[in-house]
Length: 392
Image (cartoon, rainbow, N blue to C red):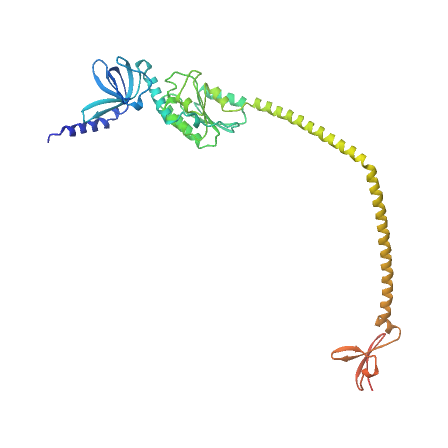
């Protein structure tokens, strides 16, 4: 095998170190030595346990308020890296706390800080719970006391809502995945708000509600989430990311719903106010009507005069119309007599006859001798018919 250059060797070491998953996400407990704050804001130091030492750094962007110094025993989170130019192996910290905090507490604070930086706990993104929810989703254990507590509050406080239970394991290694599945199930159903609840317990019992996957599932929910985890003193990341957080499951049910008694009291208040307003309106309108009646009575004499004049005019109009109709009837009779006199049939009926001849395709009455010629055929109409005659 050909010899390697130092650069090639260091590159291989760096690739091996960076590919090792175990070194990418670790917690280290040790004492700070050789602490050297840099002008750039970075902090350089070493961590030792008395048997071994490793060079360490925390970059300016990851420095927290914790004022560590030489001799301080700390619990640090980060990853291992190798710098080929100097051939240095270094532990790169992104989170550091005093040893007394404990690993679980340090993990909680580290995850909380990271999620907070991402904006998951930002109050401005929290959604309002609907005032009158019709369908309430519930994520909790089927066998836990929290289920009974929440349902009991909902029945007495807001019985109009339908509760849709998405049962979940709320403790143990399988709990985070179970809670995430329950939230996803409710996201596919028609719910207005979701209550996620669990009774009290130790920090280990509540660990599922500090799980990152659970926190992100709550953050991504389509509807507002109300959390009620543990007792009054318990604080979980679920509480921080929820749109509304309550100290207990019962309190969560209260904050997710209105109180029917308050609503009934408000309705009664509105009813009394409407009755009072209506009575005021009726009294005012009644007074207006009385004023109108009084004003009308004051005008009655004038109205009577107008009515008398109107009656006289109507009488005169009727008389004129009757006279005109009579005159028209008389004229019609006269015209009928005249028409009867001029009617040819009436003349024939009295013994006269009518002589007609054909002229250019039409019948004309013969009134003079010179209107006819010898051998011409004429039509003579008498009372009971018509007969032809020949002129000689």
